[in-house]
Length: 483
Image (cartoon, rainbow, N blue to C red; front, side):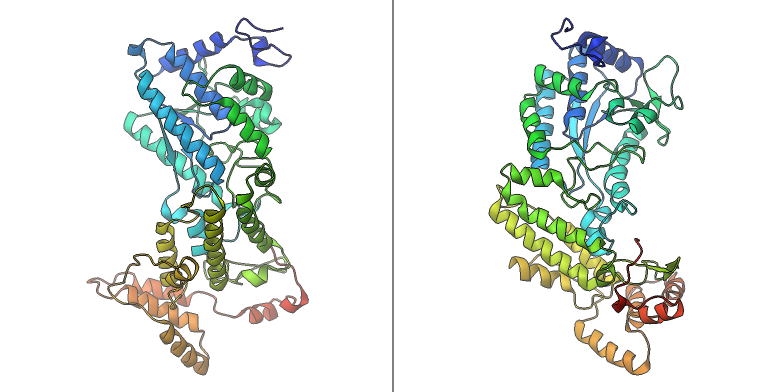
């Protein structure tokens, strides 16, 4: 059995009860029902591609004078997306913009990315955040939710309110269906729901009743209106054996799970089956990426965390719960090792892959990591320029601090004095850094609070902490708690 547009009407299929014309007409009615612009979350995967394509065909059927509200297509780029997916996404966004201009449709497509201070490498290498886990997934909020919401709120500020169009489907999972069928936020007589967090945003999910088969049936039988080949997308899924990573706008939106297109650095999953499948399908140049990811995941081993992570939290305090020490950020020396391996991986990918200029970490991130190490982590060696020169053979235009900076020789001298006096070297180094940052200022407001904050940190060494709390010594192979 098939409907009059040639799409099969199988059991549970949306096409068993609705035609494409019905679906397109609904989109037109929702579009015309409010003066609000639309923001479509686009990931480059099957569901979001179906969503954009349906809205495109629906609005193409409207008279030009009725296509007045802008349609923003935004794709979240965490800056550590799998390179193959980034290439696919960039090409699609470019074609959407070109086709929209040619067809006089109100679509504009762009990527949204985390701010410099929120990127993966600035937090992992710069601040020493441990590789993300299910229990400490610090990356999602910073790299996905905030960039998307920032764009949405900017449009809401510009237009008053905004409609978010998402490619969520009830058949994705039982939990997803439960969220999408909740009555809370429903607007009587409308297909729009109020967003439960963003007060000036509404949500529209035009393919919520589609099954996975419906999605592929539509994509493979209805051509892309912006000139892409949807069969290439199907081939990409086959090569990655993967689902897509949706645009994440809040904590209820499923972040990347076990089957996904997502970050090549993701350590939330035990194995990156998507990248493994791409390599098996002929993308051997990605092997260094997988090896780096697997090496980083090893730092989550409870028996080895003490090798990589300090005993103090970033707050400077020691936390012991239920007889276990809650470990803090990566040691600075280990962060240096991560940077070395990352730059070496980048070199290998450039040599083996299709792009000789492939960038795994940006110059801006390197500058920010250097700043954090110098001002927050007592890197008097100024290691970032040295590591970069060592691994790449090049130098960058590194900024010079007008008020000067401490040197490696000065740190060694300070360390000798502190050892003689029985004072923690990093305590004195931190105090000196607070004073250095205040040099040349007319008002030294806050200097005493900064000094108090440094003195308020726990400066005991780990052996003393373990002895006080009667914890097993490190050489006993003790497992540490997850941060």
